[in-house]
Length: 379
Ligand code: CAA
Ligand code: FAD
Image 1 (cartoon, rainbow, N blue to C red):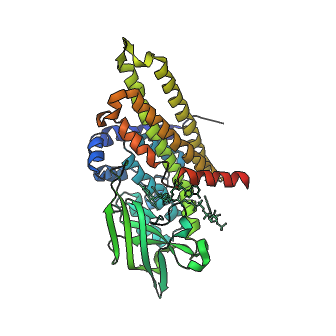
Image 2: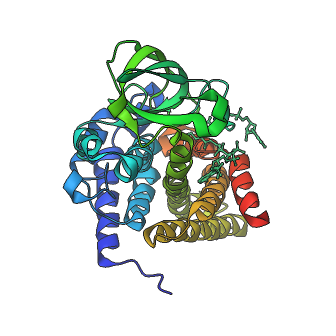
Image 3: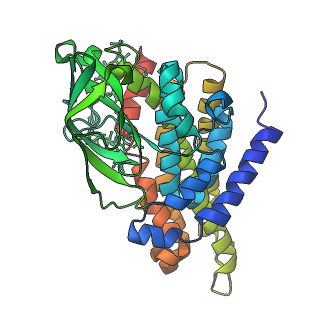
């Protein structure tokens, strides 16, 4: 067993840390206040190779392992979780599935542009009446000659308006239940494809979350990924990896808040000494550091299992469940360590606390992760 990061991992960490400080930190408070999508920052992330980190270089990807990816996600999420969710969706929900199950023509046409950062991708599973209960979705795709006719509404779609390429999960045969669900590549601008208004959210306010409406959208047969009926398995397998990305995001939010609380506790004085010399604050910091370390081990282990080509579904659910709970606990405590200053935007921790909440909800709520874990334990 070896807990040491390689030279390559350390280089990725350094590059991500430097990018987060120089490019994401300036303006992060204003972007949150104005709910402004980090367009320029994401463009630069694409140029630096953060948007297709694990994809084969022959499709313009970085050819890196999942451990490198989670290290980068952690560093960027310490500063800006709105930017890092775009990165997570593009890498693990869009590029991964296209590379693993897409045809060569689909990879040449779409994947090469997604990895280079030229365009962004979105993953469209959730619907107004089908979130956790993903098999009960209603969006339909009916085969008519050489194309499908797509109808329905998807909700809560990250990169909803900024994406150009959408992976849409839809029913091709409702009588078959989850075995009648397929997955399609849909392009922005196709007739009948409309984007709803941006959601006004508690956290990750820069991220553009939209509902999408499909009315008789013609999708060529060659844009179906894999065979008919593979869509639900595609979604579940994709989410197994996606949850590692969100777990790393949660870890980063927690670690970012902890670092700010630690530094502040050494500067702020009360009763004649830095608050870090009060045992109540020391114990909070000790608990935060311990929880973060435990979360990091779970996140790295899930990433490592994926790199070893071992089963990682269970480990990714555990990492996401635990890291997101830690993100919530640690950010609440970081606000407490800052006292009144923690309650205002300037000190960053209130934003991190609001951002932390979403990690317990998307890519499967904490309750759904417990279902995934307990089913495996009891099998
Ligand atoms: N990996 C692989 N396959 C899986 C799987 C997993 N983790 N979980 C289920 N499956 C397979 C099952 O094996 C089964 O296939 P077979 O019939 O071929 O054996 C099939 O899927 C159906 O499984 P279940 O009978 O267990 O289905 P269910 O209806 O009881 O629910 C569920 C399963 C785990 C609750 C699932 O619906 C789920 O994960 N729900 C949460 C949805 C979710 O995570 N949405 C995220 C949207 S994307 C997003 O949120 C992005 C973002 O924010 C940035
Ligand atoms: P529901 O499923 O209605 O759940 C409500 C509550 O009931 C939750 O607490 C849930 O845990 C609980 N619950 C439900 N069923 C059970 C059960 N069987 N046992 C115990 N408890 C249960 N989706 C996408 O497809 N693509 C995206 O890019 C995307 N991005 C998102 C971005 C944001 C900001 C948000 C808020 C959501 C996003 N989602 C996305 C959707 C997200 O995945 C869903 O919100 C999530 O899966 C929960 O679904 P729901 O909101 O319908 O809640």
